[in-house]
Length: 328
Image (cartoon, rainbow, N blue to C red):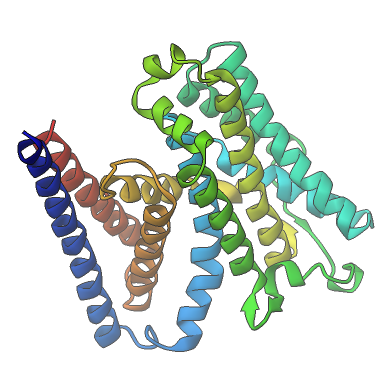
């Protein structure tokens, strides 16, 4: 009997490895096409630029999204948390507040976005999709109203405090600080989701909510913390954006939303557990970032890049869905 029960599981694992291998093979094939057809794609300067300017911020946002999708929800307001953190940070620096205080208050502002979502979902019973969609719309309106219809706020280089630019361009041991931030977030979330009792509880909530509800798991509390931490993590990207462009540009955080969702679900589609996970999300971000960069370098129009990215996400999710249906 034990052999009969173990055999289907090993077969599923083999098929999952084959599917992951096909995706990796496709990605490598695309890389070869870009290396041969896109001048400068394989240079160290381009790889460093993609890792610093694309992978690092997108991965942080995607990891924030992964935390929420782990419980079977979604957070459409991560872009709002980014923009709010960036707005508060730039405004405080403009008025010559100290850098540590500006950093702390900017992250607090992002955290409050998560608190608002948590109240809507856990206290008022609003579905996460609708709650975070509402927060997204409110955030957009607030940004427009507070900036005379969407006027950016620029900072003068000569008025910036020491250490401001280092947030986006500094390095430690030769590694840019945004990559260190990504590493810290990834390690912390990996420990939380994959190595703790809390992570196991979050997984149960995402897979069998009714079971979690009746098994003593503090569902409301964990849901609230998931949204709060998601917004706080996304707020880190707002600080990076502010330091990179020395400005706040309204609604710029929303540019990360769809790719963050895509990366999270790509990681889930090919994980053996079929759950959102840290490693899978990071791989999804790398896939999407380098594909977009390669298409840019070979001269594809930005809108066609979006089409290609969407098709890639669709194929990955479709194959994952077929695998799940086969074993349902």
